[in-house]
Image (cartoon, rainbow, N blue to C red; front, side, top):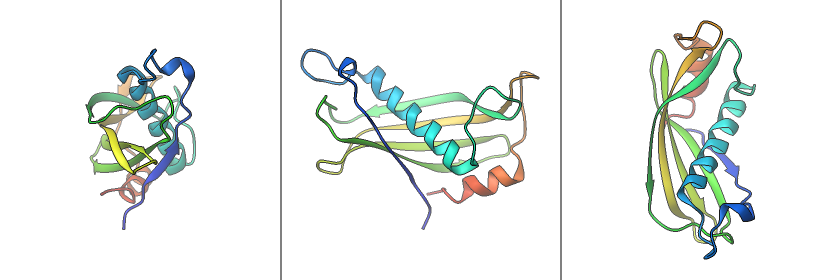
Length: 135
């Protein structure tokens, strides 16, 4: 069975409107938290603007149910595909109260060298680590 990284989300009061509804823009921030947590756990280091990093090139989200200020949310992150220069990451925003999926997100990221401002082929050790999370 493949692995999944689960990231607990701390909802901030500022994330909600007057009806305690979490704005969809903030849901995207939650997915970003999940991705950063995922990269750090899988690669063993944080992703940042160093020589060998990852950069987002495509993102698509679906919203199924409302998330609220009182929701108990986690982001579950795994890999759909590992390519030569990219990986496709898939995520669920889950409300632990009932296990339902409030939203999902598919992202494509590429290996990127910020000093050269160019993409690079993913190192073999990265590809092996990411393949452990393919579902």
